[in-house]
Length: 242
Image (cartoon, rainbow, N blue to C red; front, side, top):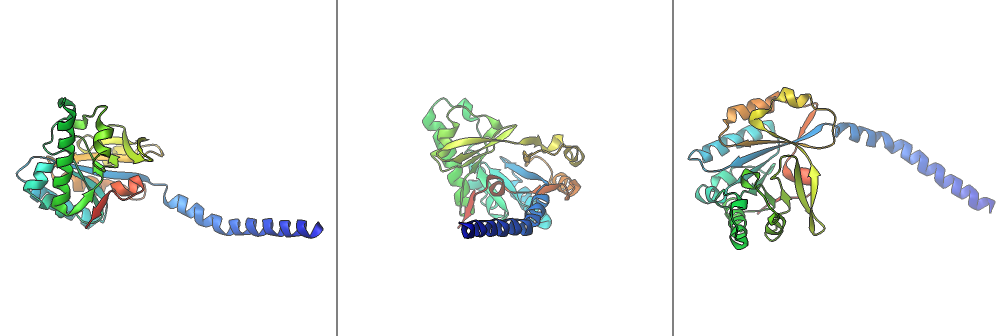
């Protein structure tokens, strides 16, 4: 019996000693990950200069070596495939319906489903990829959104002003987020945010000059903020490039 007790005590001491050795590593990891996660989100809709805007944006993101998410209207991707293909592996690409119409303005479910399906198909074909992220035009969603997205293999929905939804275990789950419009906020205002667990999402569209976006990126304190793409925010891949 005493031998068993001695063995048990020895095992406990070994475990405690092992934890003491590795705990500083975990503390350093927690400290390294304590920065605010920031996802830059870009919407690409109807515009004659969309290809040039996307190429310029891609160059800026590459120069800063940061990830982001880009949501493209299907018919724009169909007309200008380069608005999708110009983005590198760090950038997740998602869809934004086919014709950039508010889904809530369509009463027929089958027509809504077609809008989502054809938008995703056009984006996927343009970039030779498989996308699982979505953003509803104008943030307009209704009770059908979960069915529309899940039936199209979409697993992340970034349509909302204070959250994003991920498809987990057969249902969409809400995650809180601090969501801002890029034109209405500044790096200084974000730097004043309290220490919160919720990630920050900053939305821009292709009416915003890329020079302003670059200025915004360069103005963020890299010691406080960590740029992530949609896959990193979700914790699983949202863009499969073929």
